[in-house]
Length: 278
Ligand code: HPA
Image 1 (cartoon, rainbow, N blue to C red):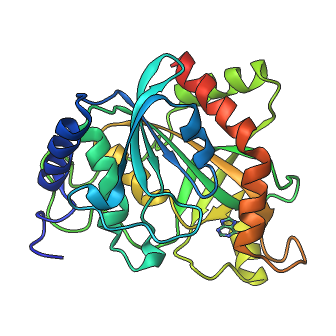
Image 2 (spheres, rainbow, N blue to C red):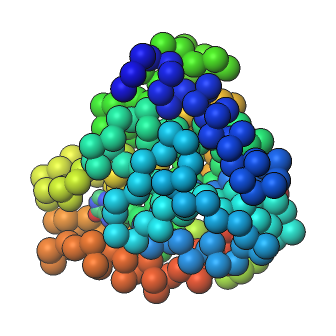
């Protein structure tokens, strides 16, 4: 990192947004979507898309994880102008938490005021099954990192309120759309861990006692930045596997991607419906 505030901050986000506006010939969009591991299929439903690879965007390094295409897409979904990030930056890749949250600053600079975040997650709630979709009602930041560490960015608060990280009216709307589509949508708490090793069975028992329903390695830095910018957030986890110890079988990224492939259409239909109804 260079000087605090210059990297991954408001000014850098403005530079990236200026570049993107001139590159795509559009001003931006009010709704943005972050597509989690294996959930990039939704991008195919975006009409009149323009894709900009992450590596072309000022301030973005390349995404490294299998299943992450690494592009910002602007187009229309459900009759609305949307921005989508296919891929994201994880702290386990060696990135600073500030970089993990930086794409959200860029989305905000492009006019996004509603953020839909998605991820693949392990199921901690024993009543659930792989393939279930969970509305994130709250999260527990067990990464012990925060993307707001450092000088206060222009437009941020030093101590942003986190009493409603996930917007309750958007959650109600998501439930309405899910019911219309005949989709069972769970409600739960997402525990965000650093990774990249999956959890041990003892750690999963701990998460259960802490009140977590699902566990993953992303999303939390993005939501913290979104709230610091005053964006409304909706979060959806795709439960790709039961967390270690709840299921006795060893865990692999292949299993995670296999489940996202199986439920990708259900997820894409739900998110498209939500965007249309916003
Ligand atoms: N743990 C952490 N992250 C995950 C998991 C898991 O079980 N499944 C998908 N992402």
